[in-house]
Image (tube, rainbow, N blue to C red; front, side):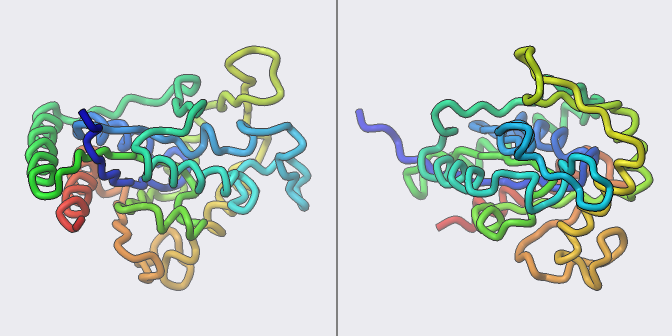
Length: 262
């Protein structure tokens, strides 16, 4: 029997470090029938995918800069992987995408909401299959630099951006204490990165602003409105919405995108 044709819908969930994007991506994965999670800052993060000397040194502060949009992500590799996922409905051979090494605070949503969306996705996927003969696979990509590279933007069928005030993000980052990474270590699970003093103010936040100022009016990443440079971008305000509300908005956008598929 011939394998059933598939249609891959790529959902991008972006936002600054500690904004809740990975948690939202995981909740969405629970709602869809067939889903693949892809974490941009695990497999495609330059510190995790190459030798230590690939990590740029900040020209002013003289520390490793893991956040600069031009150097933090292996962009060609990510673009190639997304093209493979869209074509084949699976991750490239040898690819892994997990975040088991970094502890994240649990932010639950109501089970009734999840069950309701599971039913809605099942119905929509069945209708799509009846209309096109294709099975739907949802590829869910989360990352802190999803809206920097145009090829990555173009690959996404659904574009979600979480925005949370800087003081909240900074507090959450400090509460994490650090991150496990895969380089500069003799152990299988990698080494543990701790932010140097003033790293948030000198490196993380300025890099986030550089990466996203083109998305907002007047380059105002904290308070500006979307400027329309990225079509069909959905902005979710993390200080105004509970996780359940963000999940609802993301699910609606995903189902709308599926309905729009020809």
